[in-house]
Length: 410
Image (cartoon, rainbow, N blue to C red):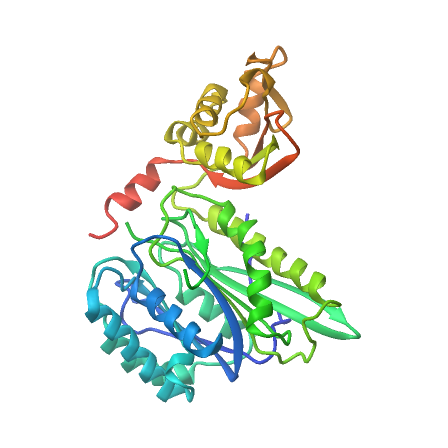
């Protein structure tokens, strides 16, 4: 569905992007990317809530705290997660940040590092450092430069994931450009920056003029309804990162007048990237949106959705377009949310399948099967408990997913 994603001309001002081959990926493809803010930008970030975290997550948190959210350079490598590499991995990450700062002309703790790839393999900091001069030479502000950044951060992804949005204020356009990677080990649970081997990395670049504190107020809501509302396989990565970085180049201030427009544009970019991640999931043949309504709270609605999204029985049924509604109800039933099964209604697309505690009298297996054969469809479940709801995007589980992950490290 997102094969046609590409970078348009309307990129935010004040950024330079680029990528090179550092020799980290076995494939020999570009694997080191950078985004430079020549004037240094303001940023906020959210990281994985996994207790096991990669070195760049630890270093990134430190740098954000030390600078108060100033970022001059985003440095991302693919092919090695630099996770479970001990103090040596932390030292290697810091070493690359220092070298990058010298190469690109910023302060070392204004370098924001990220890594993605296999866990537990020593980090090749020498390859990264040797590639920095070439990386600097690759920088530019054209769509092809932004695309090179988006492609270099990919691991098991089959295509780049980008999104753009803009709005006008007194004739001046404010722009947002987002680039993401992720196709497996996707069940992000992102939290604040101070509190099997793939990862979700998301970089959101904008030219609105804002302080880090203002960005920190807006990013969590955008993340909660996008990246924190998707799952491919239920595994939360050690490296998950979402960075929102502004150059301020538009000259338009983020204030009460512009806040809603910016928040809406940010939500649009995040939602499109989140969907693209699931749509490009490892072995995915069906993208399923779980629309949970009639819940007491959004939290409980999402709790039910996650229970269903992470059920191997539900996910394998989706892979063959089998309208096995009993698996949906069973997964909801062990979600930990109390409800009366007799009050629940379930639809696959527009097809009624369950109501009044049993199969719907209007259930037509062939029609439901036809809906589920589509690439993208919605399963709607109303629990009759209240007014809260959520939309949670997930996918099927196929033999190809097993093959990819059975042999990932070898």
